[in-house]
Structure formats: C-alpha cells, structure tokens
Image (cartoon, rainbow, N blue to C red; front, side, top):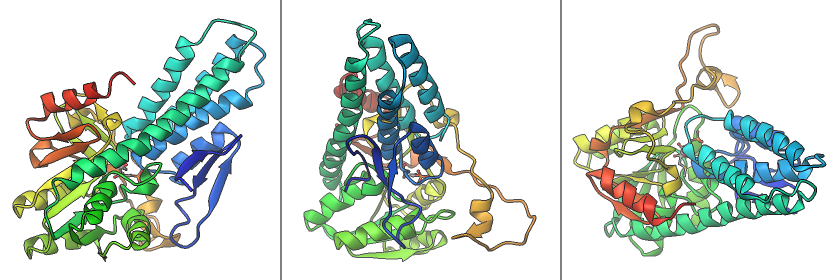
Length: 350
Ligand code: MRU
C-alpha cells in the first residue's frame, strides 16, 4: 500500500511509529485522527504530511453535517486550522492546505448544493497525492544523473517512500541510481532521537535489496574522513529562496563534514518544499519536540530522571554547504536564487 491514501471513505496510513517491529495500518475516519497522527509522527516526512493534511480536509468535508455552504466552510476552516497547528517546519503541510483552500474559494456559490465542493476537495487531495508520486519519480531520474558509477552514498533521516506517498526523494535518487547499477553502498545515519534512519530507511533499503550499513550519527565524520563516502543526499522540510535547507536535526553537521572532506552534499525535494516567501533559512520555524524523545529510547529512560533536555527537530544548513538541490523540475546549482524560482515556476501555479 501507499504510505498515505484515500480508502473509499477514510484516510489510510502506515503507522510509522510501529516500524520496523510491526506493520500496522491506521484507518482515520475523522480529520482529528489525521491531525493526531501527524503530531505523533505516525505519518511523517514533509511530502507525506502535506498529502495527509489534504486528504484530512477532504475527509472533514465528507464527514461534515453542514446543511449549507456557510456551515460547511466554517467546518472546513476549523479543520484546516487544526491541521496547520500540527507541525510547523515542513512547508508542504501549509502548501497542501492552501491548495485545498483555493478549491474552496473557486467553488460555486450555490448554498444548497454542497456535494460538488465535497467532490472537488477529494479530487484535489487525490491529485496532490498522485503528483507527489510523480514528483518522486522525476526527482529520482534527475538525481541519478549526479550519482557517479560505484557511488558510496550517505543519507540522514528517512526521505524515502515512507516520507512521501511512494518511492521517496533522497531515497528516490538512491533507488533510481541503484536501478542504473551505480550504487555500491549506502551509509544510513541512525538519526537520533527518533531513529528514522535505523527504523525506517534501513527497513526500506532492506526491502529494496540495496546494500547498506547502518551507522550512528556521530560516525559519519569518521567515514567521510576515511574516504568511504562519495556523496551525501538528504531530503528537506523547507528550502528558503536563497537555498538554505531545513531538514532533520543533524543534517547541518553532515553538510559541514561533507564540505570539510570535499564530498558533495545534495538536498532532494519537490518544489512544494521550496518556500520562496522566506529570504533565508533564518526565518524557518524550527519545531521543538518533547524532551522525553531525547531522555527516552523506544520508551525506556536512558538519562537520569528530572534532567533538562533540548529537542529541536530540525536544523538549517546554510546554502554555502549545499552542492545542488534536486527537484522534479531539474537540478539547481548555486547561485540558488534564480534557479529555485525557475524550477518552482516550471510547475505552474498549483
Ligand atoms: O520529523 P520527520 O521524520 O517528519 O522529518 C523528516 C525529514 O527530516 C525528512 O528528511 C524530510 O521531511 C524530507 S522527506 C522526503
């Protein structure tokens, strides 16, 4: 199944908090359940969050008891607001909700017949999901062109099928390059605190039959210094107009280590992750999550009780560390300003 999908009358998603121990499918019959699933990271990864939110708006419309247009719009505004408050960093969430809002704004004004609007919202949410799959395939194809023969690739967090509807962004690049026989090996950062690398990327690569080695985050420098890695490719949650890249905490360290060791560092993302309204990464909101995710590992406390712990979920990699940004509309090299505008514009106004 897809990471997140519409299943007749509900939103169905893979519960990623249970992987790799068990494969659990979560059926959400209410948009609030989807909001909780996003907040609790049962569904996570920037594109998947956006798709889940869009489907949740369509679900809210379907479930609404409103008898007229005004009442339905009020229900949808509440649902959109609840979804907007789930996670602040991945711009795909806000991008997808905006697309749903545009459908509402462009719908007819017929007060009595609200069924066409409900149908249009579901069609738009499903289009967002389909486009995401297409974007990942195209990111993979573009990205494979920068991967040299026999490449040993480092990745961080999970930017795979589980972070999208299918296939993945950074892992899409790795999948496509592997299909072309170019990938010798992948190094997977475990990605503390929630272990998306160890739990999810390792699970996906194992299933795909791509050779890999799991390492702890603090080993990346060692392998880069030893010359064991030819390039790094990661996903992104938000890319500012100047090419600064917000991604899972620890990405910045990987990028700096790559530069120090003369290794190219790529960010792969759909253009829905590019936020041209922000001049630089300084303005990207960084999600702070519970300290319990740091003091505990798989539910078990690993630090003394009552201590202070910080938990910023993302960091920002300044664009000077980024070799290129791989999008569905092409690979953007520095200087990023113009190139990002070009690839975003190439998608038309979606
Ligand atoms: O906190 P998460 O697991 O949602 O963070 C995910 C990442 O940082 C991914 O790299 C990013 O969303 C890109 S996913 C294609």
